Length: 186
Ligand SMILES: [Zn+2]
Image (cartoon, rainbow, N blue to C red; front, side, top):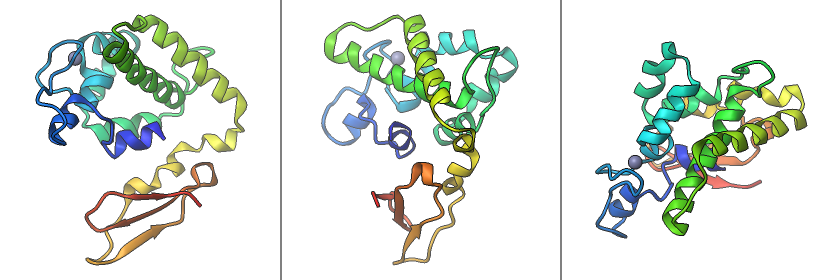
């Protein structure tokens, strides 16, 4: 669900709050960057960026830090390989870690304190490891689960029902040509 909100750009960042007329200050509360976007929180805010750089091989930095939001999320959740000995698949760690980074940001904003990033890393790692151990291998077919990214627009004034979604992410998706996906639980 969190990844879905990220892909739909529904997280209430300060940039998004200004866009909705809820605030006049779009800046990042952590570093003061002018516009706090989703990518800024999850990847580009200096402390988070430094941490990503410490765990991602140099050869991947240009691709990792140069990607736009959708491509960044999709390419990382498609990467099912483990990223080291006795580690969970990268996709699970990545998903778990960015969720923890978002919660860490909210702890800082609303409670004035947050865990250090190495602790966030450990929590993300443990969550991903437990999840990897609790699901059958077949459910790790992540590329099949994101076929909706290769969506073809329906004609104007039509709604399209996307029902070829794997059972593991069973919600039915309905959307028109231009609007955001409508999310409906079966
Ligand atoms: Zn920042």
